[in-house]
Length: 444
Image (tube, rainbow, N blue to C red; front, side):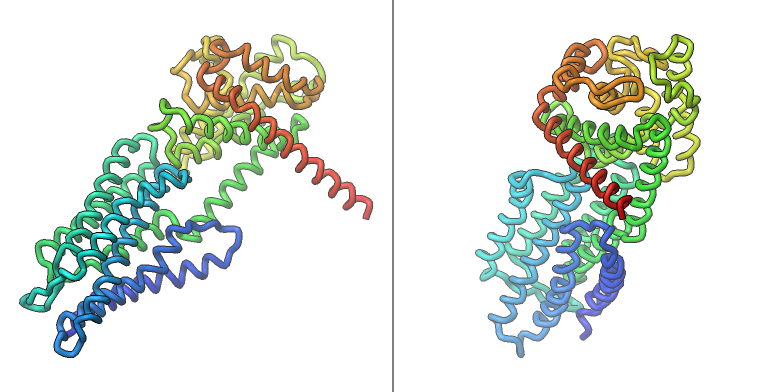
């Protein structure tokens, strides 16, 4: 009787992904997720144990009961670990990095299930099926219940966050949950089918395809670098040499970090949304490529006519992004980048440009960008003036609360003064270090 043929097939499939993953991991510039690494390590052993237990329950005459029971214990616990890893990994894809106590809380269903398994493994019994024997008992049921609880929570969260998640990601997670539940139903209705090994196999295939493919990661990284280089090239025309891009992106991150601590933004700040806003920040002034040098580099205050031309960079930036990223398979990022470029000069009181939007009619990410952009504009040296004192810069943001800026976001930025100052100090230190290295290179 060849009870473990399905497990052998799953091992072959997983081996394919492991080999490709290892080959891709040789590139040190590509970042990988620890949760996926853990899944790749545990899954083959769990499938091997699945095959062993499928064999031992059918050869109880030659396998000692203690060995059979021990193998089942390790197998069930490994499957519970896999379910928990998948659960936490998927939540990471939704929320991003989480605090340790939250991760511990997410592990509770798996921990409880594991304890029940260990305590009740002595009550495990074996059933004679028509084609093969199989094991049943409280330990097995606890594993099933744990899977249902964790995946049900995941399904509800994805449905709640559906609007702010990348569509391909949310659809991928929901499809994965549906397939896993289908596998569980088949396993419950026909226990002797022994299809539990399909769970880690499908999980690895889905995660690799949607999130962990090294080739796709390299491509995304290349695209991000190209976007940053393009934006830096545009910024360098008014003697910023990319500094404005780097700093405003840093301030945007600080604001988003503060927002993550605020309940009112809890349902909006998914990992995708935060990532897209941070990636879109460097593109906010891309429309300056269409502003003449004599205006962009003028070492004096612009005339009303010149200012009207300068104001066109926001709408022009939106057009450039729409045209440039029209074929990009990331519609959420494209929309956010477009709105950041077009609306980051809109004001809370409706006196901004290009459309005179007011209050919450201005996209949230554009409101975030507006604060970061103004703060850096006044705190950094420009061609027409020196940098303002830091206290004055914070005062300008404070005076703009409820007028130029979203009052809640502006207050969050002001409350993060310590983090902003620390970032400014670190950024200046890096710039000074690069300048010293550049001088040393010239002297050689």
